[in-house]
Image (cartoon, rainbow, N blue to C red; front, side, top):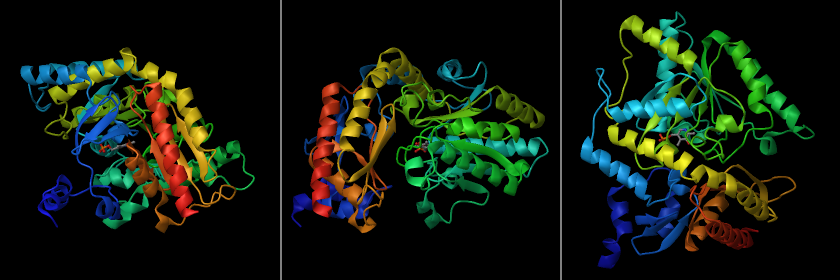
Length: 455
Ligand SMILES: *Cc1c(COP(=O)(O)O)cnc(C)c1O
């Protein structure tokens, strides 16, 4: 290898950096993409190549890559008070203000917030809260967590156990007591002749049966994303949350909304639960919470869980949990600004304004004979490749169709993400109409090219 190849950024990345969730054959073929900076929804690599990032980083860079207000909020807070914890009764003023703001914009009249550094840790924290409550309330057996197949809740040992993906079996996960229901994806999971209403009723019955089989008093919570994100952008079947919430209520099982992706505007509402018209007992937030400008997660407890956690904590005089950087002052300042930017500076309005065009673009792609389904909500969408549209038969997995589509898009200057046999689009909320045209045209070109190769 010539020196410049050995010393290339790509080779240096290979030499000393691990890649998470990366298709290693693709890296072998193509090398990593090493980025230097961004502009609006675009990013640039070390060679100066410009890419439209149709996934806003990992769903989170919703204000783009060069938002001046967010960078200023960070700088101002770094100058003022660059770091502190939230232990021993001390916390920064920014943290106090952020909690007030989160409750103000939540569906709750009152409640409390606990901070983490990520969405995974927020789900872990929630589970520890519920396990703590079980012990404190004389129900130590109340520990099981119900989620759904294809649900994504993170990568720590507990949140990976909540995640309903087969890849976690390489870690010997899920842990005991983490149960997974059928994914409420009518197009893929519906039976021949079954209406969507019947399908939803079957999903609800499956939950009812699981609760009966396990024992209601052994179940600590049901946790769901309003729209599944990393599972492939899967909106629930019609009436899903309306069908399951009464069952959970009847058995006293909290319904937790994992809003790490849906929260703060992705669906066109502040929360995904608003888009689907249900009020959960707690909300998990991260990603958009800081518009990706700082690692931060939050567990937002509604009034009932707040009171119970308060009582359980008072009984032992503390809640023995917290991360060194929980409620970080810079993260809190950025989150306060991000919420303001999303809700008051036109970003959520732009999501709503662009949604019809986004849906039209997805439906246009679905005219391709090898796209089986276009689906989405707000500015999150996916198109799913199929070898046969009528029978919904997927392509052979060794063809790596969605990886090929994503790689071909990269060649055309578009970053989008393969997920199973689907390709995901979740653009930044600042996207313009011409940028959206560019996104769909480039993806369409890639679809035509790849399907010509594999069919
Ligand atoms: C990304 C994600 C998480 C995990 O967040 P991390 O910050 O990556 O730990 C949890 N839940 C949902 C719905 C997510 O999309």
